[in-house]
Length: 240
Image (cartoon, rainbow, N blue to C red):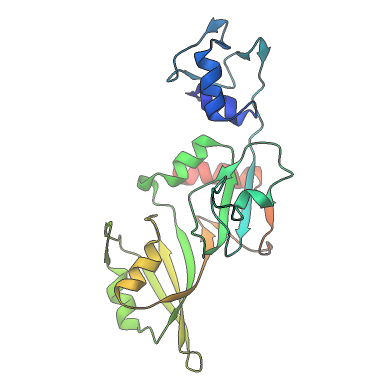
C-alpha cells in the first residue's frame, strides 16, 4: 500500500517525519532509481525500492499489541509537558509503533498499539463503527430510566451522540456510586464523560474493557501482549 514518503521513512526508523521532509527536499531520497523532491510523493514500502543517501531501506515488520493503559498516562507518542505516555511502556520495541485511537488521560483499559497504518485507518474510520465497551463509575444513583433515555443519544458540544447500549451493573449505597457498562460504536472526544456531564453525573472511573472482539483477559494494568496473526486477520475481516 502506498504511503507518503516521509511516513514510510519514519516508520522504517530512519528519522522523524520532519527530518524526512528535509531529506526529500534536499534530493537525498530515491524511489525506483528516481530522485524525489516533492513532499506529497508516495511509495509502497514493500514493492518499491526506496533509498536514502544511497542506502536502501527495508520495510519494518508489522507489530500489533494489546495494551492495558493505566490511569494518568497520555495516549500519545510524545508529551510536551513531560508526562508519562503509552510509549514509556514500549521502550524495548524497535519499530515506531503508535496508539490506535485514544483513551484520555484519566481513563484506563484496552488500547491497541501498532505500526500498521492501514489497520489504524480501518479501525478509526467512523464508517466502520468498531464496538467499544466501557465500565463507568459515576457519583449518585443512576437509574434504568435514564440509561434508556441516554442510550438513544445525548446532545454534547460536538453534536448528538449515536445510539448506544447502557447497562446498570449496580449501585453502592454507602459510597453513593453507580457502575454502568456502556457499548459505543463511535469515537467522539471524551464522549462518555460529556454524556454523563450533560445529566450532572461526575465520572469517577472509566475503563475500556473490550475493543471489537478483543478483551483485557490475561493482561494486567501497564502490561501488553502481542496479537496473534489470527486476531489481526479477524480485525481486517470484520471492519474492512
